[in-house]
Length: 407
Ligand SMILES: Cc1cc2nc3c(=O)[nH]c(=O)nc-3n(C[C@H](O)[C@H](O)[C@H](O)COP(=O)(O)OP(=O)(O)OC[C@H]3O[C@@H](n4cnc5c(N)ncnc54)[C@H](O)[C@@H]3O)c2cc1C
Image 1 (tube, rainbow, N blue to C red):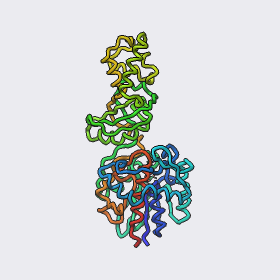
Image 2: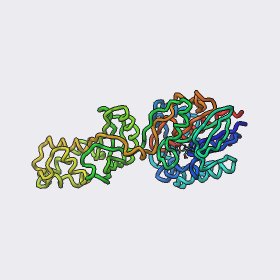
Image 3: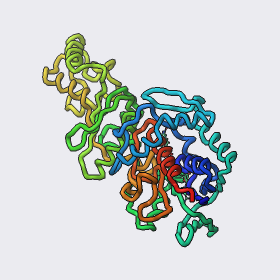
């Protein structure tokens, strides 16, 4: 029976280790942190959205999103739910098909996984930071203190570079690169965006329930509805996070990227026009600054009027029909130029990574290096916000563990 070393005790590494051990392999997990699955505690706002009821190829991205679906067909969302159920973690489904542990505590997963791993004999060595992997007759894995570990096969589950303080700081790419493996350029995903807009300071902290459309080179790519939060640096909120990975991907390709915000999604254009017209007639004495109070957040009024070159002190009665149309257009299509991600450190995930061309979709083994596998976020697959990234971690781990030859 082969002995396997898994580098990284994150979601994918621990899940792979459990499955390998269940199949009878000798498994040792080497983890640089002082506890397993550190990132999981922060997932889903501390509740861990570990999969989603609705999974589709459209939820996955990277050079070859089909690669993700091949794994997910082998280990689906339902199978993930059943596995955690078996560990004593029943599921609860909340909005948009998001699945969480019934306890709504992310810690449930690492705690139950740790207990089960111990019970079935998975060895976990904490505070063990792997610096090198070499191949002689066996794989030789060296930690930062120079201590060596030997294995027949090695699974690299070191994550990407999101949330550095959880242990995934991009060092996994170095371990793999040594073997001549192609790494697709990385960038943060599911991340707050920086905007080019002069009035952000004034709008800081303003939250509106809106819809946000990603517009790339003038073409609408994707639309999301949810709260939108304006900040000092730009924009955040669930709708923005959801489209952010695609926004950054497009920027990296040199495209013009804008967000078009509809700050009144509940009002049809013609109804809004009629409302504005009647409102300005009924309140003809009011200044424009006052005449929009009640319709939109007051922090947005001055920026919008300035964008439209309308004097805030102008009386509602003095507005032309054309002005009313321009105000309506602006409220339905408040457009912002995207400059980039808030910072390299703020993304929830890393987009890019080990090229899927380098990996066998049947086993997760590197095609150029027999006995060396990659799973999880280190690979060039990224999912939407909503449980899709953890599903990828479980599914890729499953494919690796279940297809490894026993002898
Ligand atoms: C704030 C936040 C919230 C999120 N919420 C969700 C959510 O609700 N749902 C969802 O689906 N996804 C969510 N994600 C994304 C999801 O957590 C990740 O995609 C997933 O955890 C990746 O799993 P992984 O095993 O590939 O990598 P990681 O979880 O990053 O694990 C990698 C492990 O490898 C270890 N390691 C790295 N290098 C070495 C080395 N050289 N030697 C030893 N150990 C090493 C690290 O310490 C770490 O423990 C969230 C991410 C963040 C940051």
